[in-house]
Image (cartoon, rainbow over all chains, first blue to last red; front, side, top):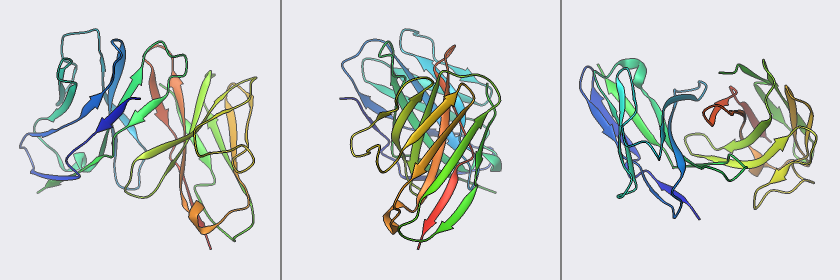
Length: 116
Length: 114
């Protein structure tokens, strides 16, 4: 069975600095998708970034980028130029491709606080 | 993308009663999901709801406790039956966007059982 581990329960970063959130996963599958979701306090969960396992190039979305290391089963999220609005809970998620179920497996989350 | 609404946004219910949570999507989607989330914690999948078929429940969740309806491609309901304080949680629905396997989440329903 697949598992997703986020080893940093809480992190903080100064505004305008860069922070990296870690995520590791365990799977025997070769084709899958990985996601980072952001859940601001008392607000809706939104997709930050997505990575297809078959793509070697790391995904980027503006200030957000990932370091995807397939052999190491690592999928870290880098937030550059951190802003106060980045304060949120961040969840890493895994989805097996081709299962027909499209189920996500979520990590336990990392609470990020951006300090002014 | 998809815009998802949930009703109610929050409720306080008495032990032994039932609550039905509605999830409405602004576009037709095949797969909808229901999650439970304790505040500050991760999401646990309750069931997957496809239109026109019975919901598929995850281990630890049963249809008698969490009946789900999926009458069409834009709507679903989750009922929390015979509630106990342990059912106090946030319940979220999400939909899968087939193009990228992304899920879009509703704002959640915060349930407190007294």
